[in-house]
Length: 218
Image (tube, rainbow, N blue to C red):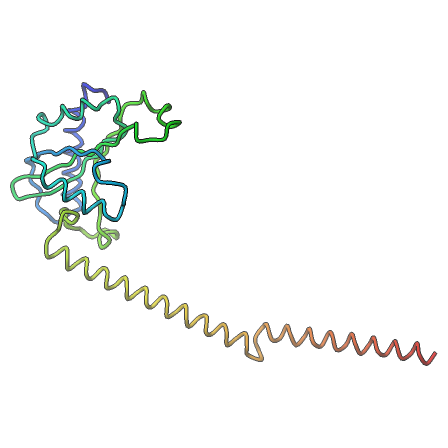
């Protein structure tokens, strides 16, 4: 991907992103696309707070046509390592796509020297909520708030997860308790081994004492 082909490549990837969203999400996706631009560093390094901060920062950006924002990307082209397209928000008459870029200069010095002359990578991505990981469709706007249906699906997913986790802990506890009982039981493999060892020691001492007595009498 060259600086000259950058705009066309982003436009094509945006179309692929919309197709991906239509396939994976239950929302009706508008094909009227507008764009905002983000530097990966804008959102800090704390992963847990990043999504919340990203939404807070991005909602104040004014979405524009691609040809109005492409200049920002081209200006940073030589330092671009990776460009990712996300659907920031799908509205009824507009789909806002976030162009988020990651700089080569953010990489470690040794790695930066290896990639400094490489063209940037380009990806179109959709982040999935937990309840969709088995193939179920989801709300494309879940990261920027989501609707009532998303909240209900997410609630059920978390409830089932906690229930299954509780069952797993109960099974593990039962297994541990059963194992402890078996270890203490008279017919457990451990007790049988201990009995055999005691029998061996008893036989060995008996044989030892017998030989010792023979030596004394002789």
